[in-house]
Length: 285
Figure: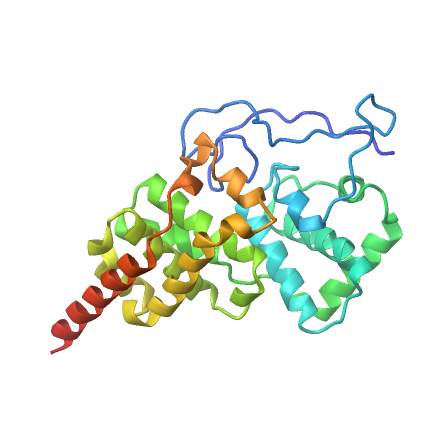
């Protein structure tokens, strides 16, 4: 078993907020890890070995301190790969973990090593298998892994409308919930980010910023309304979702507990959308 990595020194973040429970610099002073943080554990420890877990569910659950960009890119790599190749069910965890490895190499200044990802998979795969999967992914995608992700657009839109960190974090929560759903695979990253941000504005009673968002995104708010409805339904039905990692993560004070903000009532949302559509029509007239 590989030796665990030495603890990293805490350093100021200049660009990216972390997916771990460490406080991003955008949010304020550093705090200690929360209950969701997981430490490596030896099979011989009193608590016993860590259980086998699905790849993305674990790795988004603050296992490593990696940026949100790494998370989004890893999911995109899996989506693009599965559009070209059929993967057996017993290899999906290997695929997800290897996609995270590639994304970490692309995004992280100090990415985890192969042995770390093998450890997270409970050593059910061999090093050669992960390296072979890495080669297959890169060849299948023709080494074109600089894929646009919604997270980048969210940051841009927030700056354009001068949104608060809480509103931006709410939009990130909405957008990150879509990573677990197949229904959003075909959505353009820019449009998915615009729809997530528009819903966040409506949830925070900031709908008056919608015209500004429309100007900078290039999407008419009326064109985003079907997506906004779909996203609001996703939030409404999240209690039925067995995957609780994203919900738990954004319920933490570090992320302003935005997961606890209730979704909009569908009738109220329809009223907001209809009023905005009428205003848009009058402006065109």
